[in-house]
Length: 157
Image (cartoon, rainbow, N blue to C red):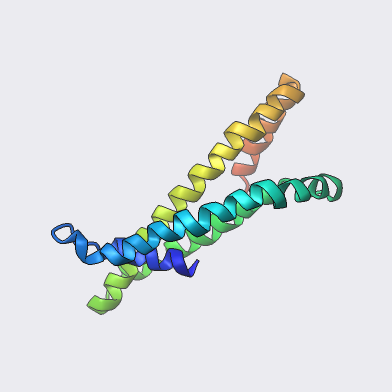
């Protein structure tokens, strides 16, 4: 995460008129992504995931990975709401206001990335399983219950 934080700072500070000034940091980012992050992911796919899959099936928790995205999104939405409140209430010194604006932007970028991935997981893994293995009536009941939950008074609290 430290490497990604450094890369994020590098891309946020790129001057379009002088992009080469950020060249060293950007090249470090390319090397990190290519030589560290991607090989790490490949290693997980070939070793960790095959070892974890039967354990997850046996001991439960397969949807815990999907729920983790919801927890992250909840946290990011709360941070966004607090930062927007601070920003719109006014009274922040210029430097702090700029920092809050930058954080609001990063939060929205992250929300979009996490939500995009999460929706893909649901659309390409979860929903096809439901369509293959549940009756149409069972699927309709799930949708009904989801919509009912959206009307619950504690949603969004």
